[in-house]
Image (tube, rainbow, N blue to C red; front, side, top):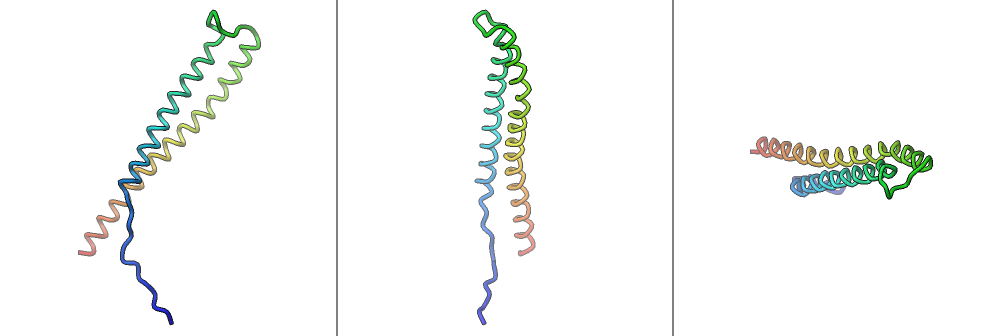
Length: 104
């Protein structure tokens, strides 16, 4: 019979997990700014003198504006994902501290 190894430790780099979460949140915020810039530009296309005018422009703007929600949902999900990384790292650290205290 083989002897089973007993796991004596778990190594987890919570600083890296937090850092990745912070990076994801920052990138999501950058993405949101880009979304707002693009949709502001598009929604004002037909109000500028050199902009696209007429019924086709109005229909295009209306259609694209409706699709903005898809991009905002992606932003929200990315931001939640980054925050989840950070929260998970905190929970892991708390658990590791409790285990250390119990093992003393």
